Image (cartoon, rainbow, N blue to C red; front, side):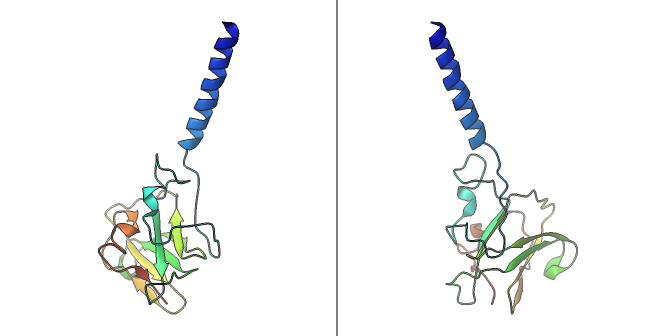
Length: 150
């Protein structure tokens, strides 16, 4: 009986440790030239959210394309600003990785909305409307053009 109780406690302890690890928010932030990301153009936050199967809970994520809107654009920069067209305060800057994806698990206060700026090597693009979520593919690639620069 005692061995059975010890085995039961051991199994429960392993299950509890595994469950806690699955429920933690692992820090993930995209960086220039990295090739660790995947699923370009898809909704990153369908997996990378609390309870999801992806590592880390993204607060902002998306994919940048070149001017053809068919090929991903690596190593661009995404900026979140308090004012339109790169005015106001820079709230966060996110590096686009070597596969064209950008993401962060860092906490972001969207407040009454933030404005986005995407910089490529030749072009800087501004989003003229405020955003209140970092789930970029909710609109881009679905109901509006993909995010693109050149």
